[in-house]
Length: 270
Ligand code: SF4
Image 1 (cartoon, rainbow, N blue to C red):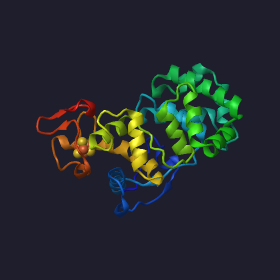
Image 2: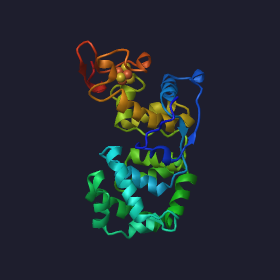
Image 3: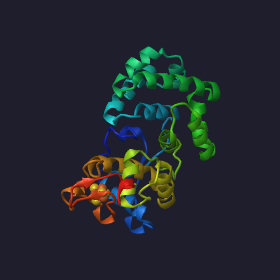
Image 4: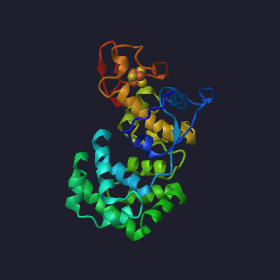
């Protein structure tokens, strides 16, 4: 196992919280769990939770439609400008009162900065009105029924299923939440862990059914990393070299054709 969790990833890297943990590969009860265990041999292993819910929401919105490499500096700049080290400033208050143009300039590197700044200011206002501030929103995310939290988050403008699940996972520490982003959606269907034509929600249902609750958070972050390093969208590692992928023995290669060098979305595989 490697402990070099990348500093730029959806969890915020080593500074993003979480507790070091270890999984026993011998106990896997399903194929999906065996895949997550194997990822645990490749990468760091952690259970997540405990992050500030509003900061987590902001981080995930900044990461929409862009890479972590672009969104991380925007997150850091936002925190430097609107939060204080001592925690005296309530981030919800600060962003509810922020000038949208100033915020847009601050988060420029994340792309779509006008739209994202508008959403963040509006969300901060909504959360301040309903929950009072950071502490009230944290308590809601950590203590309320996870389905109720998810439904309420999904009602917020700009919050889709992945964003809601990331907040539940990284802030709420809710086990059994496996957010599905574009990497997870592609890899799960290529490997045969979910039907080839499954949408994001169906992939999430299959994986959350088959992976034990405590392994879901790590599985999510590690599968994204695996997608960046090995099972890339256009050029999966197995395309040129069958030995190049450490998970090849667990994979159905749906839509990947090494003989012809062709790669198609699993839903288009014959
Ligand atoms: S064998 Fe190929 S398609 Fe399967 S996980 Fe590895 S890189 Fe992806």
